[in-house]
Image 1 (spheres, rainbow, N blue to C red):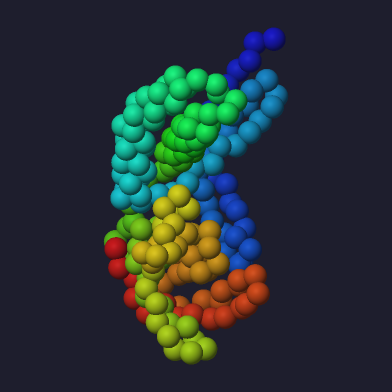
Image 2 (cartoon, rainbow, N blue to C red):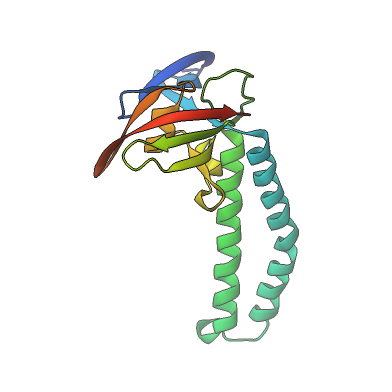
Length: 190
């Protein structure tokens, strides 16, 4: 039986658990009656470039790590060679990280936000917590580029998914695992 691959674009709707839906473009592959959907992650251009840079840095360090492994192997008995075990573990970690990052790029869809007043990937959103009137600004990003320390939250997070597709002035309900609260969108910028 000859296997045929049929590719077609579709939009899959995923319920985010907060009452909002997230639409992801996907390719569906039919392989001899077995179907599977491939989901693409929306990511900013900056996030894509950051992942590419990390891949380049890891690839550049790979020859040095291979040499360290070879030098440790030359020391003799591998069963009691801690340097060899550490170098081998380090190289496995590097290879694993490279595979992970390459998969992220393979399934990344660079998203350029439109110039409107709608919350979407890549935009900075300032909002107010209605219970204590504290304000916060976050950039809404794709899952691979989340960085809380730099105020980047995912569209899949409780706040990110609640804000998605809303506008300035909207009051949005956020459902977190142990807490429900409301926030008001104050400003949206690219």
